[in-house]
Image 1 (cartoon, rainbow, N blue to C red):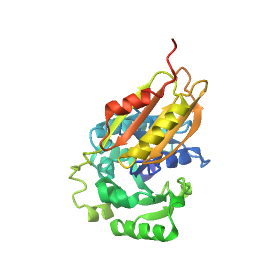
Image 2 (image 1 turned 30 degrees about the horizontal axis):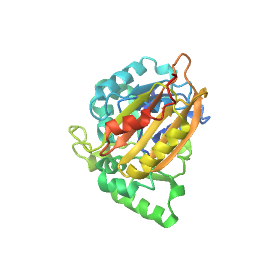
Image 3 (image 1 turned 180 degrees about the horizontal axis):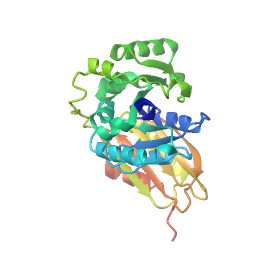
Image 4 (image 1 turned 135 degrees about the horizontal axis):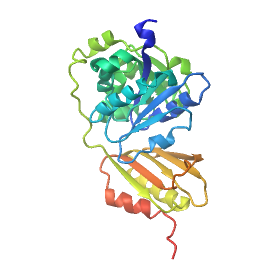
Length: 326
């Protein structure tokens, strides 16, 4: 058996806030492709929500929400990968979902500069999910969006139902100005054939070094410093009518600054969790699985954006709770 065949393939899922990474991850985990994956989810926020949004599967899901995977917690990633390698026979590959603000370059570096990781894993591809509706705005105000496209081996141009054909053609041309090599797949709700995403053998270090000659030496990078994350928890159940009225008015008024909203809500008398998500002013939600066995139902909501007012958001969310018992 060759060294390459012994290495575990790793796919990095990246893409800006709200592009549809978790939707794509859930599709991969739900489809009947006959393979098992260990999943590492990194989240930009004080409270983890993405782990709840990942479908219940037999796969192991490791949540990293104490910092950005490309910055402060890369050591945690190395430790998680090292632990996984001790159970190499339990899965066929590893999926890493980065935060929406992650620069994929330092994450990719991990698979080349850390000796233990380099020996036992193989970076198969960086798959970048792109929000067709908001791509041009993000390229204008968020350098991370451009970096995520530049380092992509595969691009999922998502939310195609929200743009016209001429707009889609213009978006592809804009993407090609940044990355002329990546394979582009158009999709709605991340509906891409899994065979086009996994086991691609697409990551090409030579091409990356042509684009970024200091890739293996330079791990300096910066984030959009004006973007912050704020998280809130509520102990009492959330009144859905109060919540819908509050969040609707909030996103209508401040949706340009609120890049991403996501949460798990406990509605009164409901045994299932309600998953709420929004990108700017576009919101959706649905019931997902029941509360984990032994877990106390509680609601949590995460905002990621600019000019966030923590006291105002906290008061608004907590006011959506059902009235306390007299």
